[in-house]
Amino acid sequence: MNSSKAPRSFYQRSLPSTCVAFNSSEGRRQFESALHHKGLKSFFALMEQFTTQSEPAFCGISSLVMVLNALAVDPRKVWKGPWRWYSEEMLNCCMDLEEVKKVGITFDVFSCLARCQGLQVENCLASDHKLDDFRVAINRACVETENSNLNCVLVVSYSRKVVKQTGDGHFSPIAAFDEVSDQILILDTARFKYGAHWVPVTLLFEAMLPIDTDTGKSRGYVLLCYEHGNDKDALNSMLSLLVVFSVREQHFVTRKYKEFLERKQKESNKNVTYMDVRTFWTEEDKNIDLIWKSLKPQVVPVDEEGRKMVNNVRALIKFLVGKISTQPAGFDFFTEHYTSKCQENRNRVIPLFPEEALFILYLALLSPEDRSRIVDVDDSVADYDTKERLLTEAKLVRIALEISEEMHEALEVIECNRTAACCKKIQS
Image 1: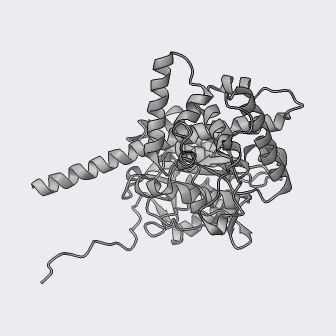
Image 2: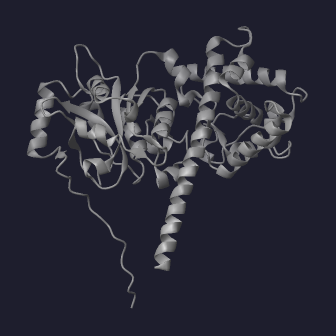
Image 3: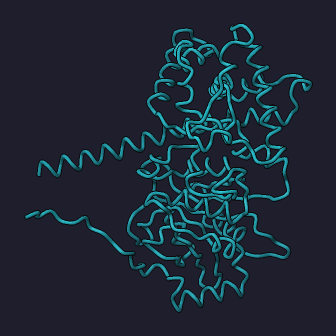
């Protein structure tokens, strides 16, 4: 007879006394009060997009998806069928989603993801700010003023323990503010655990103060803003218009790359060159597929302006490679481009050449000043927007590679803790 017990399971949790359920009598009275005092600026747009996170550790990812769709940000790439729409699997620029399933994301990773989607990000660590600063952010996101349209949403990163809930680090969007009770409405994406609920402003601020052991810093709040109608700014910031993005599928490759760079700098006692970068990522020109272990092309933009920008950036890269490369013009890495292994994506992905990806990786390791110096070519070669787009691409890849290292380290800590707990259990 099998005596093994079935895995323990749960159906939601009861809210603690520190919180007021949105669907309770008191919660409805607070909603009515918030409506009367114009504290629902973010509510209706967020409620339209209120979703349940698809993974237990996807609170940050799901909160950001809610915000992007609430602010009506066009992802400029297809979700399913003919529709462009944000979903969790699309937010993979700063880290591997398989790792996120295990460890979640940190405050910095959340901010990186938001910037990659073209949002203006004002991230504030609670330890560096006062309660009154938090109130200002709440008013900007939740309180209506004359002729005010929704262009900013507030997301908080906090410890559930402080508000007497189970678990610890969590992300949630803030949908409303009731000035009479001085409480804010949390639309918790972990709806399998807790429904939407009201929490006192002071208590939530206190819940952001404890140190996150993964980062050594406090948690905090983020104002995510998006202005419609400024196509030029969108073109210069949207991830969907970048030539490549980091997907971090093979961490061991990027870790070896970091060790390679450190060794090269010690050997030569000067900056790593473009040809050094190329030597590593092509295994001395023997394997051009290695580059695609950590970088992949983005999908082709759906709008004409975006496609034009991609072509302009690629032309600029080819010009710059010709200036610094010691290889003869027209060498092989500009003749064989990336082809998606997924048949469905064959004609949707930018056919990027390995040399283009290599050059972006090279720019990414340089200081901002050195990048600007290299990209500073005559306007007859590339206009200002094209040069800025390439610099932004390199900056985002640099951020993505750095944060992916942080993600992997967090994953190693968790695996180590799990192993230690398992060994302790076996020994006992």
